[in-house]
Image (cartoon, rainbow, N blue to C red; front, side, top):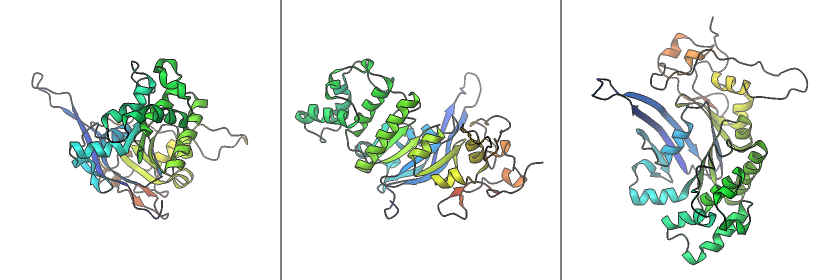
Length: 335
């Protein structure tokens, strides 16, 4: 991966939502700054993990990259082609190569269709991928590749468990031989034992086909296991980005440190290696975020400079490890 250029380059991605207001009540519409100036690269065969609290903008990034939501600003270059500027025909080709696995396996499958119809549906849209005569055999091959049986093609979604339904969703996503899979919390709705099976399946698929993943999840241990690099988001912005061992072993941003300190762990020695960091206050509203650093209202290092210009996502002593903080390596504490 190190010798190859990125297949996806996201630059300055912004997504704002206008809500409320209306002439009848004389109120102005509020602007929800769901995603603000997000940039990252993705290389072939790489997994980029996106982590952060609920509402930080992770899933909005995913939906915007797929053009399920139209961006407010920014670029997303897939092999040099701007996804956000693509016309209908070009966008259809791009979507064929960027697929998605949804969070809820109970809601993402049409209950009226048999599994064979669900998995073959992408070929209805992209008719040049596979001749219709080859659909039945290919559906059964895909089901076997995700750990299901060939005869499952004749059944309906309600006849399967949550983990099996998610495998069907993965088979459907693989039907078009994508280069990128956006995994939007693909294991959060599953039991822990089933989560491990699905994670192992995704790893096997990546090793076999060299697919790149954008892996969105709340579970920090799952993200560490799956990812090559990790991007930590807070209130619509990436506050830290680096290799997984850099971020997990040597976090530079205060929010990342607090997030990792809250991760449950079993301490057999009776001595925790790090102290739990309790953040004060609530997450600010994305309709009215703090000026400057958006984390400053909850940060124990906050100083006057933090209220000015937003800190850049700057590289520290380690190559590729970036943090958006004026005091990433220690610095002053709040009195």
